[in-house]
Image (cartoon, rainbow, N blue to C red):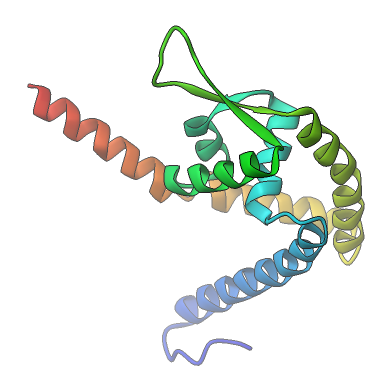
Length: 169
């Protein structure tokens, strides 16, 4: 459904593109999340397990930055993963403030089995697009994501850092 906003051609075109992008993304993510739910995971839990599988143990702050999630959200999701026995936290001896999140053997087994099924589901979803369209979509999304400026989380962290530096003076 296109926008009902009555504005300039540029505004209407931009709004329609945004609406289609948001709806397409929401629809795709809803279908993909059904797969996670059937395995007893949320999308956020899958994201953390997949990041730990491919990148190794990380502190929660790094996980949040990689997944574009707030620290509070990551803490809650890691708490739930830990309750299931899929991850464990390990406080670092050299810096007690730093806590690394590790996959447990059970977590590694779960995510290692899920990733191939997830990839297969993504390939099936993306087959709606021709290979050239998939590549164009990748480039466009990268342009919107990278060239669109800082994410709100990065801006907030930069602002906090600048405020702390100003107060220290």
